[in-house]
Image 1 (tube, rainbow, N blue to C red):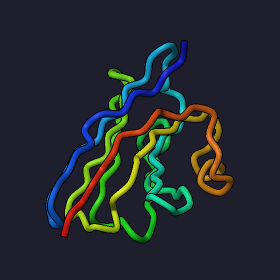
Image 2 (image 1 turned 120 degrees about the vertical axis):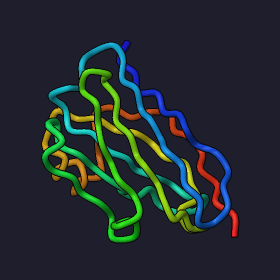
Image 3 (image 1 turned 45 degrees about the horizontal axis):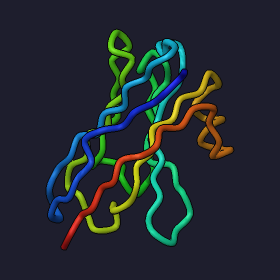
Length: 125
């Protein structure tokens, strides 16, 4: 069974940091583009960050540019999201995604083949 399992969420105060991890299992994702989406209560799901299979290309939503960093370790089948300078508006459930298509297609269509169950991030002011 192919799975993406997120970890690292939690509650922090504004200005704090968290590092999310997403471990894949059931198949290798070393040739898949990966990324993160999030959904806040009562809001539409939105793209956060994406990374190409080699790690050579990264993409960020304007709202997190300069504060979040996406990276990956293909040997561990894992993608990470380092979140610094957290703001209350970053609160939401963060979902890891993976797809064999280019990450730009995933961002544009807001659809991915594989989704994790999500990890909750709460940022208090």
